[in-house]
Length: 123
Image (tube, rainbow, N blue to C red; front, side, top):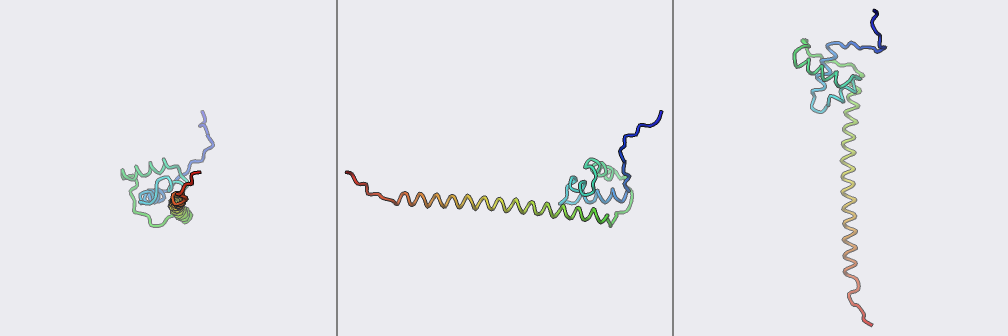
């Protein structure tokens, strides 16, 4: 009976590629998900590689060079994350300033209402 072909293409990754991906995923400012997206692999695959690396299945020297396109993607992703954090911080500051401005306007309104005509004429 012939083997069933699903039409899926299975990628074969080198040990160097796997080790470098694992090293990147262990860096403090990077998540498994962001590294997996940059390398165009599934996060579960990277998690499996991390486990295999812990178990010593990748017995080789550390690799110093990574594919240029992967480095570029990760650098871009880091920049995007930094900018998103900065946008969130600026939006929070802007909201605080708006609240303070409303507070000041209300205080001015209260002062002007209370300092208005206190002499009530009775007729």
